[in-house]
Length: 522
Image (cartoon, rainbow, N blue to C red; front, side):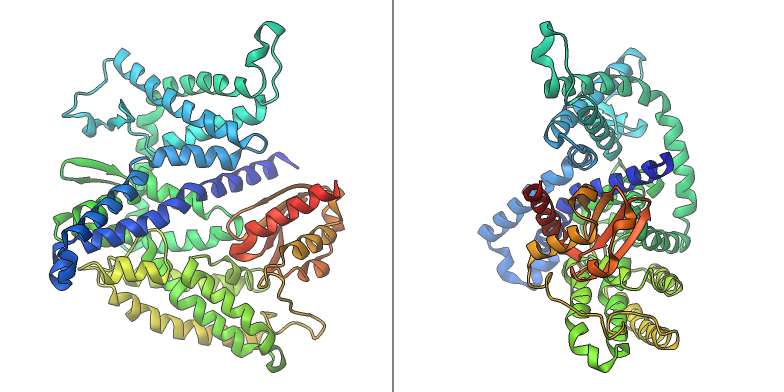
């Protein structure tokens, strides 16, 4: 593997590691959104039984429990990045990442004291300082967690098997990893304050382009969808959500950096009756309302176009496949199975799909829509759209319905005009199977291993949200036709000797089955 390929693989791995903390933030955000809506005064007026003291106690308690996640987001990212980036000793890497995070923050505190730049309580927010786990430090927020996670992962992979002289043998191996992490975190804590001002200025300069009116949602929608095939869309989203590239906002004298922390404050603390609620269209133009156009309208329209374009005799077989590809994002926010079904066989059609999403995002922004959080499912639409006031949720329908109609006719015309081999339009010899649908993961694993040239050709097995990611010794041994028998909806090689196999949201179970099968073979 070349340096360029290793770098690309590392970036993809980093993007996948960001999914771990985001995965817990999404359902907790739904709980916060639901409980936050149900304790609002206007909601109690509409539904009198919500005024019940016991019910209100339960709702406010649930909100407090869920809120602890958002009060410790950097810690979640430290653990998630460490776990996702480490290849060998994931447990010790996570342990070391927390130690690194603590050392990083206290070292910055020492630096600020030594240089006379530690601000007092009244002004520390104005100069980018704040309290983190009881330590006054720079508000690195998510970036601090990511740095600590990278330190923990790198230290674990490099030193988990480190041997020391006999006199220090007790500190060898895994015990050596957190000690190395302390050293690196200390060095990082002394360097970061020096460069922090310049980094902040750079991100703010980027935000001046991204945050300008309707340009922002269009660029964001394009980048998210175009980066999906590379697995880097999470990196882009994190940049907008958690750094100054997404802007800095002041609410009640407190400064918030990035879209998501600001949105958390507006949705879950300020509420619809606050002045801060007017900020929503500027915040949500980067968030779930755009994803809702895709998951609730565009993808169902593509699925219908595929079904109608399938050969009549194949429709009974592909019906279940297409429904699954539509229901998965509708309920679970995972769009890759549908996207990969036409991305590689019709890239120009994918470009049209991306542009449609971008145009829809701009339309929602211009109409002042304020619906949004992280995910774009029907549940999120109900909670963050219907249950909150002044969101203009109806704009999603006004934009989404004609967008779905346009998508349907464009895709149906293109599929039939250019004979694109979407599901149901393959050769007669192609046989559909229900291995994934019936959860026969053991059989799927055996097919995958066989099709990849046997266990001796497999170097490493990993997965993201929808894809099995496998490093190979020789990519020429892959039998793509046999691999189709596994029930995959997409196969592609992003780099030499590395394959992605799309299985949808059940991919983790496939990965576990493949790993178990490889252990049995060895």
